[in-house]
Image 1: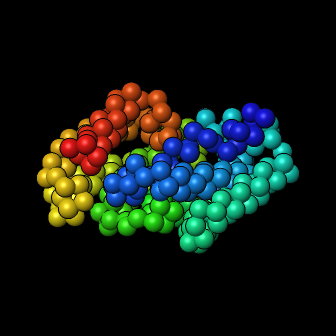
Image 2: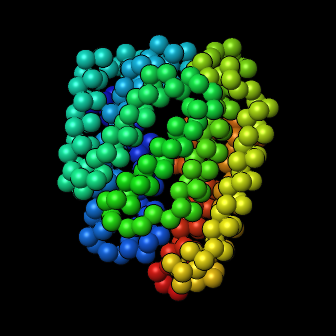
Length: 289
């Protein structure tokens, strides 16, 4: 069963934790009913993402064989055949749809848009430079919308803006890794490589990091943040955001390790402690102070 589990890329499910942000910032995370609904939304996006990963790996299996790491993926390596992979993909998509209906029927269209975006991405949009990273970032916004609908809480525009910018920043770092591989080996991981170069991506990442920091600082001192949190101390959390951005820039520009964002978060102790510090500080402000 291991190749089939690997085909779903469970380590990528960490991205779906974004569905918890709306209920967390609405100060409803201690509400058991809303928490269960959000857990259902998390399961929905995990299943939907699993279906997308299977299709993407099948579509890219020939190109993945040229990649130093992706060549070990189940379909690229031959550990899983196309037939069983398609059955698994269909099963995950059906489970996602069923769970979405159980959580709230309003969630189903969001999952449908998520699947449509990702299918379009796999079928060719990812070969269009700039548009490809925009689609990736929009996927995180859809997770926020899904979490808000499932828990029936309002979704702040600030959360959407900061999440979109953060996802765009990380997506650009991943494209930079493709460029580094191309410069070292001559192998094009995707056609969009032609639309980027390292200098462009370096500048874009720095711009995105600056805009992200400004947006986050504006959020922490906004009337919305003060009203919801009941505190004027939310700007303290910006310290951890600055740390996290600088660490990711270091991993990308100095250590050249930006090819697998989910694995970076799961392995890098510095980033983990930064996220934990941010989460604990915000938890104190929202739920304890």
